[in-house]
Length: 88
Picture 1 (cartoon, helix red, strand yellow):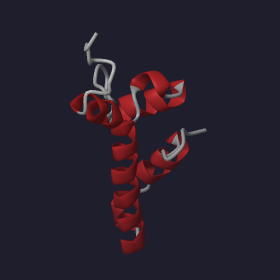
Picture 2: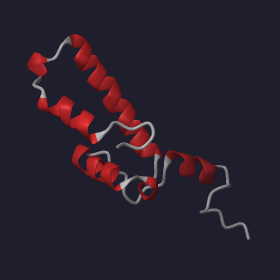
Picture 3: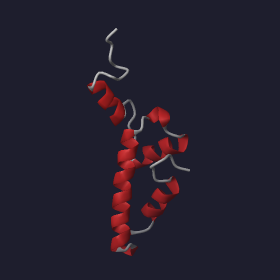
């Protein structure tokens, strides 16, 4: 099972196992779009909020964002609304 907005591990494996020479142009395009979307979703979601299987999948697909804030956290911090803001 995958996290919301993420590709499942079985989908990633299926795309990786089938040789490119056997894929249609539509399959190549679909793989590219899904991969970019999954990578963006991975970067936007903090590691602490990912399921174990998604963390494992990210490790093998190089989508891991260990020790990095999510895009949303970075935006909040830039606006002074994040947890890194010490205005006390």
